[in-house]
Image 1 (spheres, rainbow, N blue to C red):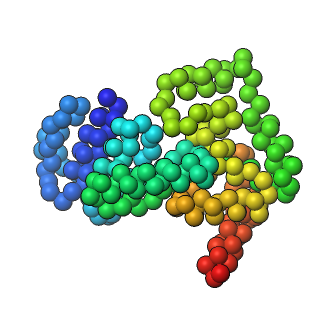
Image 2 (image 1 turned 45 degrees about the vertical axis):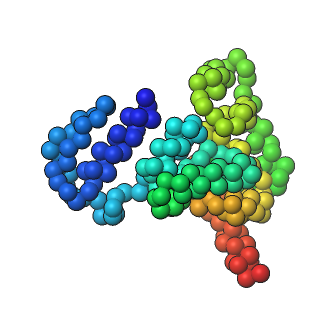
Length: 219
């Protein structure tokens, strides 16, 4: 029911964004009669739609109605499989290829690997009698997930630790490029504390990624 409602909602949005006015829609969840929307989006034919989902119904909706696919964190192999699968599904619809593939990831960047692992151990120390663990059990019992989720995956949102962007700037840069090589074009990064860790990433990791990318292009 949630997916069916989403499909109708997206159909209504695209209808309102289109040049033809007024717009009417009569569905199971929404009824719109002679509606006007102005101004229209600058983007044509409409605003880019990003969506994520792992159920069969969710994937069908994404390849039919959206422009970009965003994923929970996963290993390089898991992400490569998801991207290839969604490309095949999209091609079967006859629509233009998906424009972007995004990946959620939590960054733990430290000067040494040992320091990074200590921080990883700290944030994954979830006690079974805690409220957080109860929420984890509720999540895995009610969600249609492609991978078996462990407490490590639930310690931060969207399975952000699973891509393993944990370690020194050099290690993280190498792993980012490995994801780029299998088709990831957007990273949805998580940090804590937000400002300090974002600044560390921008200062220590981003220049390395760019430098390594250039070396790879030249070789």
